[in-house]
Length: 466
Length: 131
Image (cartoon, rainbow over all chains, first blue to last red):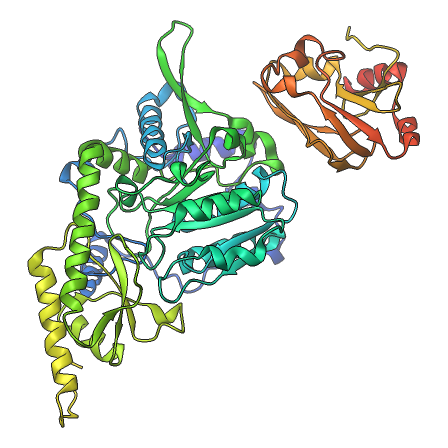
């Protein structure tokens, strides 16, 4: 569908038709006091040559470090075909198609995406995507409060093993909606959420329990026990899942006896490159019985009057253009282009390919942990199974290790102390299928030398790179 | 001409209310309302045991054209809901005043029924709304 903006002539003709002199005049009724006036801090426009140069300089400043950092965004291989196909003109629109008669290709693609996500999460239905994993959790919390009609409390149990940014985003979005987020501490030995930590809420009115699998520390939670505990309390279960891990682990829909009720998460690992802050996309799936409480768009398959299969937006009575202020969400858009990439990515990999990616991630993460903990100054923090990242504690100041590693163009991991003050000198390290044995060896070698320099007896001299 | 039974009471939001022998009040949407909304695809009924106040939204009727709230014509406790509507929402279209009832309330103050319109009042109200 071509998009051609109005020409000067078009604009003049339209203004003449309604008897107006300028576009500015159309905004006359907005009082001066409410207008921002001239925008300050916005620089003058640049010519293409200048902007190209600026962007190249910025890109070079970022460098191309060897990445052992995960913490929510993951460095996976993306087959070249994914973005070659995604950026074709037919797909190159980020917006959900309203007009079924003009958008069958895009609608079918979203339908296929929904089918794949429902299979991956083991749930009945998927929406057409949300903005990102963090806002996806906020939407899931709002949805759970609507869907759990037995609960009146608007209280949500959210373990501190859930991604700290997701918790912050959720707090920002639901804070003024009289929803209470109750944080549940993690087990310091295992890095997971214990059923014992939930015991004090037994018998209380809880709308939902959030479980992240694998959790922010990369650790696997006892999803069955936690899910069954929540359901016994009349609470719904929101599973925050890593889609790659789902190819290997039990999907949310199969947790416990009844399965999680809602699954959401970050879709970036499925074909979206690591970009500074996005755009990424969030996914959301749920059981059939809650579909009318699901936010976002849903594409359905149907037949037209000639019995030919066709695709169209469905269940729109949930959405803002029909339900107005009672809509399930005012987020009724999606991340169409990124979903296109994810759908093509999953199609190219297939179920088997996705599983092999997950296995390779896990194997590499184990190699990484073995290589780094070979040093007597580095040890794992948590004694529980992990997927493709886990926390390592250093018995020397972490800053003194990270700075030289950065200087060697290695992103060594994510320092956990910024979100967990009790986890000083602790690094969350990650290895995906893209990290080779040589990469891991390079990290371990550099680390070994740095530690040796810093701990050499009688040698208080700081390493050169620091 | 719409079907407006004389024995029922009506709210401005197009619900009807029937007082039963036991004092409870059965509620549905009027024939005019179902006709305007079109083919029903989903009816969300309230929870049995829930307490509602008069004019509180407590059910949703969703048609192929729109979704609309159903308001409690009187305050009280929901004592029964029409479970059959889950599988056959079209009953609201086919028999709005009979099998298409939505919920039954035990009113906390039967006096609130006095605020509703009778059939003549509702007929006049519809005529005025048309203009």
